[in-house]
Image (cartoon, rainbow, N blue to C red; front, side, top):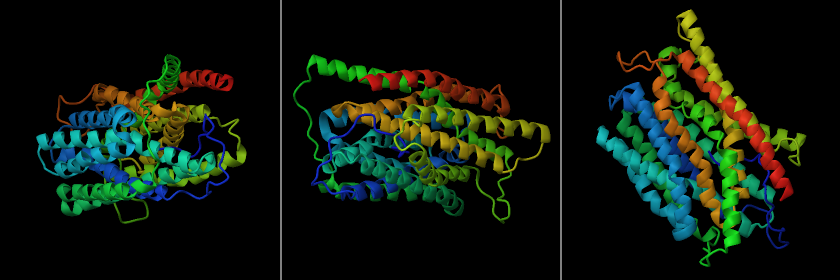
Length: 453
């Protein structure tokens, strides 16, 4: 996941320079291939993590879900530290390179089939992924601002390709890692993302001469500038706070949705002599992104080229509604399980993942570019970290909330939550629905404030 091509910049860039080329700068390709390898590594590891915790580390579904949520919480909490360290001390390039080292190490340690090793590995992975996360997209945006000033469409195109790189990488790894695991075991499967991370670090480091020149401001800001910065930050935090409820529902797709599919879904692919693994179904998410990006991009550009109707806040509101619909599909699927008593068609989770992905594209990408565009110049990394903080809070809330799920067919007596799968997913669906209502009014107020500034 990263910046979305559909959001219109909130703050205009500098006036285009007559001497600036109109092609992508050379540094873009290092960002593209480095991000491709890194996200392939991260999402591949995460795709098989939940079943690894259950099948190899022998945790219950509930404990595995809680551990998965705690890991993701750390991944989304540490961008605050990453943005702060890069903005104030090390610069974005050296922060990324430095924290790639524990990231690489964590992938190798994760394959050791012992609980303590898994805890250590997830701490290293969260440290690397979390600190790096807000700085990659910010450094790329800075590169375009410096080397292609005023060319907002070109910068938007770069973020679009960047987003595609992420999802191509994650689709490949989500499909491949369960196959590698089934053939050679988890230890070998975890080697695949480990070496991809090594490649990602090498590609990114090689592109240093082509990135933006980072100059940190050593002069303390005036009280007025400081006040304006924190007013902007507070406004963005208020704007983004309803998104927590969307992410609470969204972040169940790689643990509880996997367990539900394992227990209740006939995973045989219709028309083919092939049965998917429950965690392989997650590939619907990146594949859907690859299909949706050009379609939605064309739709928005043709129907509303000036972004007067499909504003950033309206796109996010629509995404929240779709997030509620995705959990609603899972709730309805659980109802049919209960009434029919047989395994469900694979079409149910596929539909859930597809609808959830549309919501993700509208919420995540639009919000991330909105945060980048609205943030003060020397707080962009930190503000991006604050946007990602909404996901950290959601995963923190999911740790106790997910324990209400009582739909597992494999959990031992006494480890089940009090709610059946249908009730649980229905309650989950209500959360982003509430968020959509709240965000609609908050977003209108934000747009009025931007229009007056």
